[in-house]
Length: 557
Ligand code: C2E
Ligand code: CA
Ligand code: CA
Image (cartoon, rainbow, N blue to C red; front, side):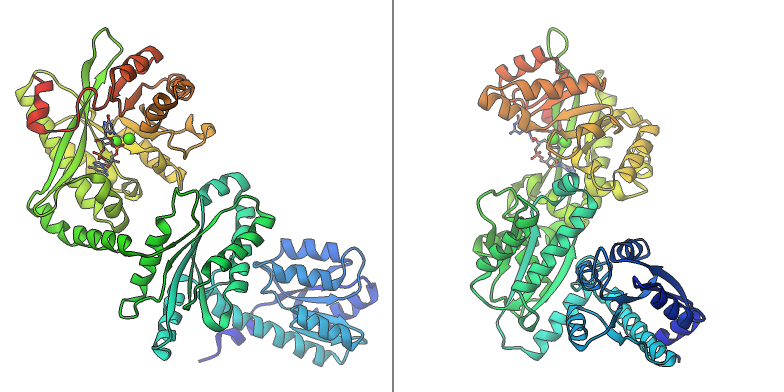
């Protein structure tokens, strides 16, 4: 079989940029190469840079004169090599002396061609070889390395790290996770292009602190880097050096690190990184610390979560999951009247007592078990609504929570409609709560999905509104039928006596002409204040905690 690289070189006509300020030099080279290559020319360094930026994906090689007006060849070369999307383009410098040859090679040139030019076949051979080498390398690096940072991507990282372990079974190693705090906020603030610079700067500083010979580095996800390195006790210093360098360019960016130190090699490599990641996760929302070690407390949590996951399918079969109901009251009239309810799941675990959803929902969202659990809760809820319709005169809609992960399922609308139909209730009887944070991310896709649900007749309540994700600009364009204010608004307002924020979010609902629903209402004072501010509905311990179905029925009687 033919080598794919040489096949590519024979088949396609490649583009070469000739950057030289002297007309005669451009002419000679163009003449020499025109038969085999498409030639673009530039008369000075700045123009050359423009062309390279514009044609970064099509230029196969740059022939670069060192002495040019506006930007010297050497400056240009060093700029190109610093930018991850350009650094792969091979550059051959056109030189007049030996010293500049050495400097150019050190700056990243692939080769040089001395002036006056050697015989055309020599020039062509050098060009041919430089392209071949670079494309051969590119084939490797496109699959193994991440384009933005040049570091290994996830799959290859594990492969390399496992191979390392195999050959160095006795070397003590640390699994380290480095992340950029609040990356999604930075994305909003700086935009995508700047954030790519931030990532590539972080990667290169990471490489400085964790050099090749004792570390393997990986750009794991957008804002997450993995480091597998010889055991050491100065990760803190290294983190601060990286942070310092990054902050010199991007002020206020916070880097955090989670470490599974002297990682137990009997444990699967991925699990070791899960542990480092858990240490890292502990730092979320913590403003004081930027470094955390995996410790016994986290280990207990891991073991607990592992137990929950392994008990899950049995629990589902044995109906250990209980659906509780919490009433929602309409407070626009003189007296509050029940106007709806929210279904909330609990786990009656045989050996662990009642487990609250805060402990298992995020876990199951992470590993996909949420699909089965949610579906179970929706079915139970729909069946309950049906039963209540038969037994009580009062009919109220009941809302179920739709997890963020569900929004990616194209069958979601169909699944919900099927449940409604199978239970003989109306689409309008089953409200859907979708958390505000689900709307961010791939917002077009999510918005489309929510529109689909609304078109089928579902009433959408945006949950946890104001917990800090969507911008005010965006909110007017999102589809929903009611706003549920995040509980923190109420808690904060009554903690510091400042009602402004609370009034503002209620006004936003008003502006958008949807009812505001306040949850987490615990006192009469809160209830009265919310009523005065024009909030339409409330839910909270003040009226009732979430209750098992039979206890909830007293509200329907
Ligand atoms: P959420 O949707 O924001 O639900 C409101 C939470 O506030 C519930 O916690 C509820 O019990 C609690 N709560 C209600 N009134 C008060 C109050 O006056 N004071 C205080 N401090 N808390 C109050 P819960 O039941 O522990 O649920 C926690 C979260 O778990 C829910 O937050 C929801 O995001 C999720 N969840 C619960 N059930 C399900 C489910 O079946 N599927 C999915 N995907 N998520 C669920
Ligand atoms: Ca909810
Ligand atoms: Ca909520």
